[in-house]
Image (cartoon, rainbow, N blue to C red; front, side, top):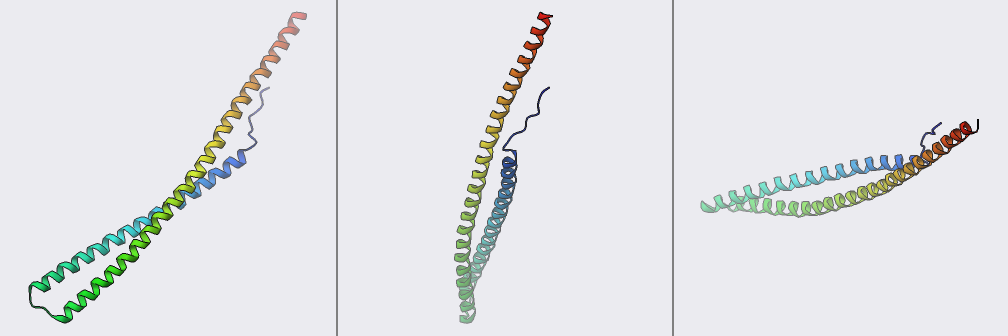
Length: 146
């Protein structure tokens, strides 16, 4: 009668599998945050370009010092926001890299467990074949003696 294969580390493998799923979700969230910062930076750059175009139009016509000051202040504020977004972007890239590395670590650990399970299963099958052969040899030897 063949025994069923039960692996002693199956609970650990399942735990790593669940941890891998959590790490995949963490990475997806970090990538979404990164994409959000990239989109904000794009919008900000569009606003800066529109403001520069507006400033050039003002300069080609009659200059109003108040409008010029307002546009300049707005451009300075956009530049400050751009610097903050660049910092946020670097942090988001760093978080993505960190999450990706954590995921890869778990994937490697799970792969090692899967390889170990496969090796143990092959050893189990080999032992089962050996036991079956011993049982068959015993049955054959009994038949010869009777």
